[in-house]
Length: 273
Image (cartoon, rainbow, N blue to C red):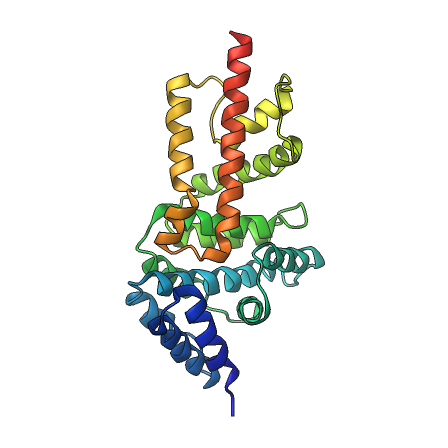
């Protein structure tokens, strides 16, 4: 008799919601998993009105789609496996929560995984909230770039994800540029930031790309774009809209990079004036 789904589901539900109702929801989902029916995403997402329900859907869908992206070219690379593991470490996932993530990742790798159906259900569950969908897409892009490259099949998978969630191909291309630049910018800033030293052309170029802006943008538009990005990635707001608390660290890192990029640009403009 399979009982682990019920046990993990109960614990997962309680950890996310801190309420007996959330725990019972997790127990029910675990029962569905134990009986071989798995998550009924269509039913769940259609009624995912509570914060804990939205977080549960975000969590499971994130890791299952990670598996889908990793298997896009026919095989899961060591880099992609390492990324998934390090991501779980970064989120501080232990025991039951980690098992949930691993199960979801494994399901996403399976042949015939209904990626589009799951993505549509996920989109409904978070009420089409653009900032939550954006964070979800950013997670998938980071996995695709785990080995430093983006092949044809991975790019195709990302376009499928982006289009299903309501993003255009142009939106995806811009986001890809921002995330690549963000990784380089984060590495350039190091642990102590840029300090008061004059920025190099490479650092400035990446800073503008992190914000998705052109270097000739006015100061007024710079401030406007900066505030919009900070609002989109604000950790507390994202959690209330469906981002699992375990994934808050990524949102925090994103806001730190946005803040650092903005500060560097403002500092450079003051020194150049």
